[in-house]
Length: 82
Image (cartoon, rainbow, N blue to C red; front, side, top):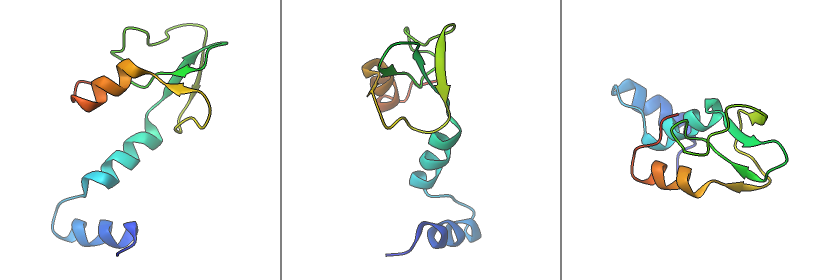
């Protein structure tokens, strides 16, 4: 099995990038937010519970707490706005 960097390089020469690599890059730059004092992290800006004030934010995927079910659903059906 090739390392991700090898896959990335071979795909670049053909003009395409593997989807898994794109997802990883998006996760690294996508903000995660949670309301202060809460455990649920949101990552779709079009989530009905996306915090707009009084929130904690980080750029990497949280290692504690829960990921929002609405955000997960939007991601699964392709309607998540990041």
